[in-house]
Image (cartoon, rainbow, N blue to C red; front, top):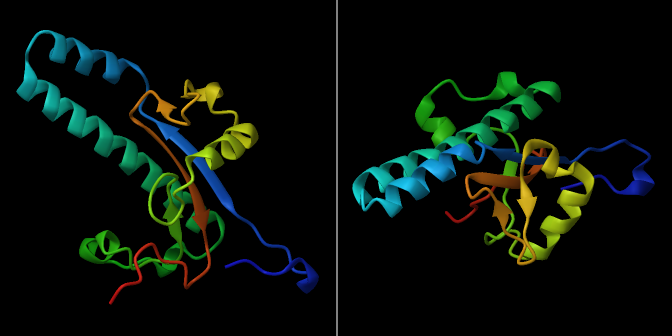
Length: 146
């Protein structure tokens, strides 16, 4: 998905780390400790989805800065179906299973600047954080099964 160095053309790759912060993790831990399991599950689920929404927001910013956000579909269903240009590949999933690659992203982005730490097991803390490699190639898709 990248131009070869020999092409002489400049290419880019987007890297991102986002978080909704540690306070929401503290709140969910308090709910769990007080046996308020339903409230815990609802807040935890919301916080994880907020982190994903924030990551998608920054992916949209990348598309805008690269000049092709105008090609994004108008229908929300098509956005959910990832019918826009490029893809955001998070570490630890099928396309990028090696969590050790997180260390490379962390070295470049220094996520501690936004309160995110990388554990010895290559997990992001707080839990409501995510990282990704953002590709802009038109054929880059997370799911290509048809």
